[in-house]
Length: 507
Image (cartoon, rainbow, N blue to C red; front, top):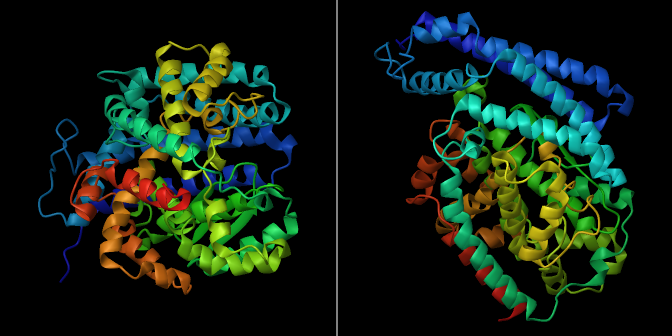
């Protein structure tokens, strides 16, 4: 007879699933705000989001939650009180304890006010970006920076206030460790970029000619039909900034955007967001509403999106699979050889926009944001000086100066959402993806021929078996060691980039 969990554990599980139900409703409000909500609805929507965020926070730190958790674990030491709990129950209790300690540090009023502020700020950011008016957004950003400084003080930190913010997105990282990774990474990327810049451009103007919205949407749906996404559980829509949101393993919302003169941006966005979706949908449904049904961190999350966008989507094998469909929908490509399209699709050229950046320069965009975020949080940089500081770092790292703030410091939505500490995970995700890919290749030497033939299910299944199914069983570091045998470093990522672009640029 199977061992029955104690009543306190079952009660805690029920409370956790209740919180997740509220959280999924909150996610639906955000999804609607970015897709279909009329612009005039922002005031009531901000109030709805603030109220629901407040309710969720109250449930997370409620006396009932604390009471049931206290029957299972010692709050001061984290040691279990109940013997012989099944492994899955022990993991859930361990993670509930971590989450509870962090959540109880934030006053409910702080959470409510922060939610209302960021809901309003995201709408102001959108207007400021569209109209190139940083001054509209600056007062909101000042409040958001102050809010994050206060949050860091509440959580506490040993070395840098930014450490407390990173923890929410990648608990295994600190400011010092990220610097240790990013400093040599930046040098190696700049060295590779210098080699590429010395060679003749492989960019072809055919890729930047206009492609209609209708044609791009047709390609979008063809792409989704090739990917191993579950049609009954997946929805694709349009937003100003592509994103992925999973309400449940059986309800995944992804969005893309249509740029008339950059149709491949739409393709890469769908690959990227579907990678996020696969992770959420690959989590064990039976553990939904508990830590075992949650993703590990945003670094690992980003590794899944970059895996599909870059390692698969930008590969020659996938190009062989999808290019005939592009040729059919966009007749001007009928006479362009496959390898010319592949090389042009992967051309390297420093650009202003992070989400449109090539593989070689992408992490430089992230490192720039990491440096600026630290300075804003520490007070070394004031919000009013942000445009000038941004432009100076862009010139230093990429040799470019934005002509407008729209293509400069206003281009990303994250700061309007209060997400300080988030950006480093974009670069860390690339590193995790490449390190995971080395293990994947060892077991699937024929992966390229299988992708070319349209077989993509085995890739999703490998990721589900090695990454997705574990929920929060492991930390990011532990998972990297489990899958690859060593902790995270940049060697696999740099080896991949150097090999690929030496072939494309012939050096």
